[in-house]
Length: 329
Length: 264
Ligand SMILES: Cc1cc2nc3c(=O)[nH]c(=O)nc-3n(C[C@H](O)[C@H](O)[C@H](O)COP(=O)(O)OP(=O)(O)OC[C@H]3O[C@@H](n4cnc5c(N)ncnc54)[C@H](O)[C@@H]3O)c2cc1C
Ligand SMILES: Nc1ncnc2c1ncn2[C@@H]1O[C@H](COP(=O)(O)O)[C@@H](O)[C@H]1O
Image 1 (cartoon, chains in turn blue, green):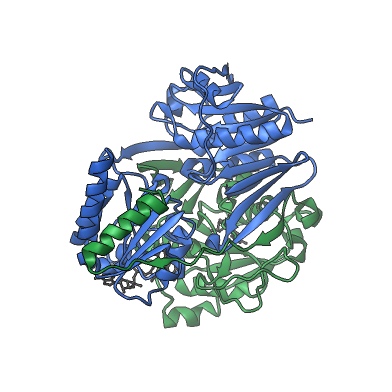
Image 2 (cartoon, rainbow over the protein chains, first blue to last red):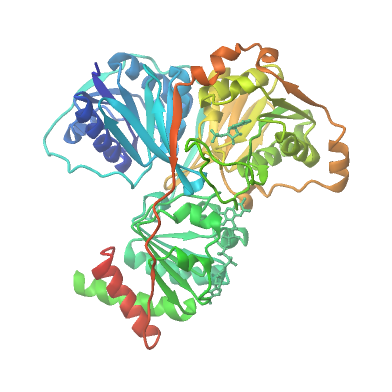
């Protein structure tokens, strides 16, 4: 019978990332359904001191690998520790965040364990001890339900911003167990880290995204979206047309060959709504389209549509948002 | 330098996806096929390595005979040879088995670098690159938006949430491609390239040719299966915000987002 569910907690820059709380919450739900305990593995530098904190999410035991050489994620360095934790606790399922590093770790870990991975899942169910996971395929045009063979270990990564986060129960501490494995000899290394310190909100984690397409007409006009984004605490995205034109960095591209985002609110300005763009933002909780062409396909996906010239509308909208924020705070 | 590209053929990104009658697969009869965009970036990146260091670029793909067309396209872009793994035993196989087959094919090619996509835009499995690296026992670097090599190392830039890291691996190594068209700007096949591609070697292999036991890689050996597909929920019809003038529409939109949607 199942003993535990193991989550991989992501630790960066001295803290657990938000995706780790989401993973822990989901892990706890599955563990409860299985009548199992919740364990975690955390790899990083300085993580041992913080690991007990995961107890707030119901984690009983955290396996940690703490070494300055593990400061930054490297598949070759992290995977042996995650695999070791799996050996130690023999879980009924492994749950990771489908973050940039989590997806990579999950894939290599699965191969190392000979386990099957369902990447980027949006739902996990557990009926009568049987785990199933649902994941978008064909860029969200369809969903696939995955099931594991008898005796196979499910490895599941969870799409950020989708699953419910449990309220932490303050004070609960997890037991911390150090993994005794040495840091393996590595044939890959981190040469540099360049973190954006401008306070920009990360697209894949943003609750609100303001996105601009070819209708923005030029790079200088994005200042308008940046301003709106700042008031909303939003991230700024772009269509491929804007990125291909060199107006915005490729890291801002939303879509099938860009980022897949799941904000509460996605505001598309001057974006026509090509199928490849919809692939990246179609599952946003609310979609607003601002387009001067009332026939633009984006309107068929939008909860609220505004048929206007964005150069008139965005400043007026920004003004109204500012007023709302002033009365709310 | 010998570079191997793992290439998957995927449906065109414009495709309408329909669930097949069995509920467990996707109808493929009316699909148009393309090279997975990320694998096209991989071909481009591989050709740039070859241009700098000499050597060869080999395309390795698993799939049915229709995939020949995509492999030929990559050969027309400038790759030298192709290997198509086409074995009915792999029908219904899981990612682990496919990755094993791809790794076995790579092993025969004395590759210095393997480049592949970070994900295939069909099932978005996002895993086979790292799996192949693990089966080869090589380091791998994922989600490259740039790739350089001095002949004994490979260096990439990898975007992470809120920044970018620069990573290096000793060769042989595997790299998966991130970025987008703007980053890699994959070349088109030229007309002479297309002519030449017709004569380039393209071998078809079975699992046994790669030293693998078909039973170990078959659907029966799969540890995971897709048991059903479902369509996403239809979005309720939206509303066009009306108002006398721009300011009135702006006011109404803010009200709706605040009071109805409660997202502001
Ligand atoms: C393999 C492949 C992958 C792709 N991947 C992606 C991807 O990841 N992401 C992506 O976005 N696209 C992707 N595309 C491209 C996609 O097909 C479209 O070309 C692209 O999304 C169009 O961008 P756009 O909507 O900004 O531009 P357009 O389609 O040109 O639309 C511009 C819109 O702005 C409106 N407009 C113009 N001026 C104004 C104004 N003053 N006020 C209000 N509205 C105005 C117009 O009415 C129009 O609707 C991909 C394509 C392929 C083939
Ligand atoms: N059938 C295949 N043949 C060759 N390479 C593949 C195949 N499937 C996946 N790959 C490679 O693995 C990458 C990731 O694919 P996936 O894990 O399916 O999302 C792809 O971009 C390809 O480079």
